[in-house]
Amino acid sequence: MNETQLRILEILNNGRFNPKTADEIVDELGLPYDRTNVAIRNEIKSMRRDFDQLIGSSNEGFFIIQDEEDLNVTLRHLSSRVRETNMIIERLENAFRSR
Image (cartoon, rainbow, N blue to C red):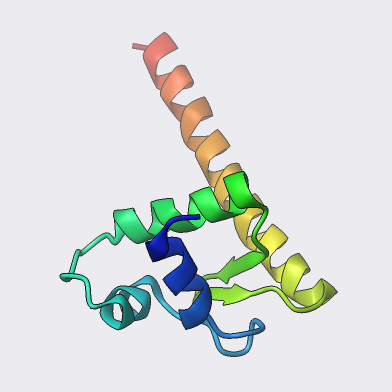
């Protein structure tokens, strides 16, 4: 992992009850404010995908997964995003075909 990713691990709290928002992570890293925090989100995505880091997420922020319920919260959060993306894909396909 890179230095930023290692710092993110130090910053994140354990468990779903004390998540850190992307804004808070950016602030604690001392990085300039970014409205979307895409860079931090991409770092976390890489940590999960490439390094199997147990980083959970919810609508309230990111955290270190500590137990099965932390994992379940994260899986529900990610699944809802997948459903929403699939719905958008379907709507775009239908709109294109019906024009």
